[in-house]
Amino acid sequence: DTDLLFRKGILLDKMQRKEEAIDVMRQVLELEPQNANALNYIGYTYAEMGIHLSEAKRLIKAALELAPDDGYIMDSLAWVYYRQGHYRKALEVIQDAIRLVPNDPVIHEHLGDIYMSLGKKNKAAEAYEKALEYFYKNIEWAHSQNIKGEYIEKSIDRYTEMLFRRGHIMEQVGVEYASAPTPKGLPQDEADAYRSLLEEKKLEAMDAALPK
Image (cartoon, rainbow, N blue to C red; front, side):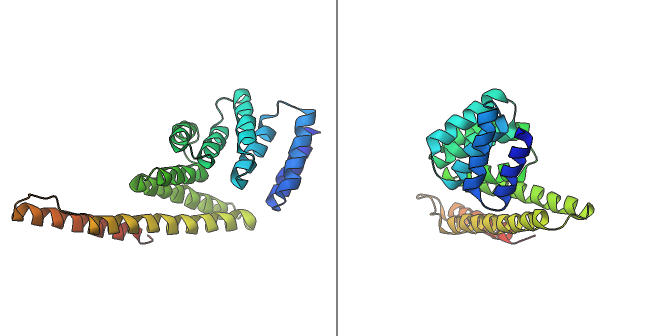
């Protein structure tokens, strides 16, 4: 039964037994070669592990052909491109994923990572802010349903990580504002106004770095 095998694979994954989980997913594919979820699982897991990236892309593209409107599979493809260093392609694909799945915190986290690799720190901070919002909503939902254990612990861990990463980025932005040079040739009053604006922007960035 492929459903039972797939569930076994997910259970092994949760136990951090990735290689065994991949073996089980391959058994699923032997029985059901067009199982998009199993194809995506293996491809995404390879991407997360940073291995077999060409094979990962092939598997995920096969999954996407079977489920072309699945935003989670699109996110997997974007993550492979990211791991391969194709950041602009990754950005293009993940933006499509977010249009389909606008409230998933991990996809917004991936978007932030991609923006960071493109040197767009403010955009990365915005994406991490969205990830924070949705991780927090997951925590609230879990509390409302009296869910405890691994799910809520992981959500809290990811929320805390996002706070740190967003704060670190905004600190960097603040430092960049503080060290930005004044354009040459400005009259003194304009130069003073420019420096005052940079100081204001630095303080805004530093304030944004603080946990709220």
